[in-house]
Image (tube, rainbow over all chains, first blue to last red):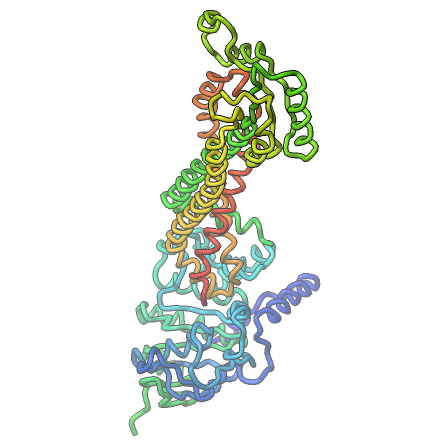
Length: 270
Length: 302
């Protein structure tokens, strides 16, 4: 990846006063998001088990730690527990056993009312984009900021910024279904990243896309990672994983079967 | 408070779910219309009953043969009852006045003129402080020699015991039944609104899902829906109020004025239309807000 791309993703160096305002906003988001940097690992699973009903196992005794700033692939066949892993991270589910710690917070002990603030610090990207069909691209991205209570002026500044970073500037007045799948996924990434979350989770983001488009999405996620955001990407796109040679966490039937740095989708046969 | 955003979202939702919104408005409209006809009718009946109660006067007939001292003694007895607080006021009605009253109440003058002499006895008209205690008054006066015991009812004292107790129990029944009916109507309206909002939430479940994913608090998600409910509720109520006003002007007013003689005009009344309209619009808005708030609880479990 070129350093140009990294520079491009960071906000342009603003004047002193806007800098202070931006810092205030950052501080506010940090306080609300509950995810502060420098609190140890970004994500820690300790002996986490999640069952659905009595005998369906989502995750079985998984222990894993992900440092802040890492890029991690979560791989495994359908039903291996990738989605369970992700839904535990945003506390859509609670673990039956073990502890899930995100940004230094034990989610098992977190009160329901704090969950929205947790999620403000986590960007989420999904296979089906989850865009709002009746709204333009601009409105879809602005929505994430309206929800977190940003000032209208801040919204007018941030949205065009993130749209240009994701290469969508000329699409801002279009509706989602006028865009290609790859473009829609870019919108969804723009929405996830517009708050500059400390953690970005992508659940099969390239699942519906052709290989070329997938590479574009992959590059975008990688550039986001290079700004310091931790990225966890669940996928079963073998080619992508092999090409990137990043950390790979493999799940099978809910168990952790492999955790390797700079690895491929499958263990290389000797 | 991001009021502008909430209002924009609410209006957007109403516009994109026109059919559902109309259903909600019509629902509130019907409920408020029923409420709007019920409240004045209920108050009218209550007021009419109260007026009837006040008409439950005790009449003590005086025998034509009674001597002046006997009548004075009876008068003294009634004054005593008045000082005990049982009788509010009383008047003496002479034979001639009795005849005049009968004429005023619509008796055919030719019949009255055809009478050889005045058959009506003189009487005391007693207004009781509490019509329920009429039997006590009657018991206290019974036995006075001045009383005309040949009059119907045997003892010369009439106060319509049956009518009195009947009216009083009906009044009480109307009061309780009215309250129960009012409660049922309100609950029905809230359930209908909540059902409609449920449809609206269902139509917008994707929005709600995305809102939760990007970290919206429950109240933040709830506000646009509550505002939507209030808008629909108030709109329905306003339409109803207009319909009620048209009904009042075209039907009720001419009907009331058709029997608007001095006797019925009196104290039977109900609350003014302005107050009623205000109550109904506020009720519509409240029902909308409560209906949507209640419905959303289910959807907001994370």
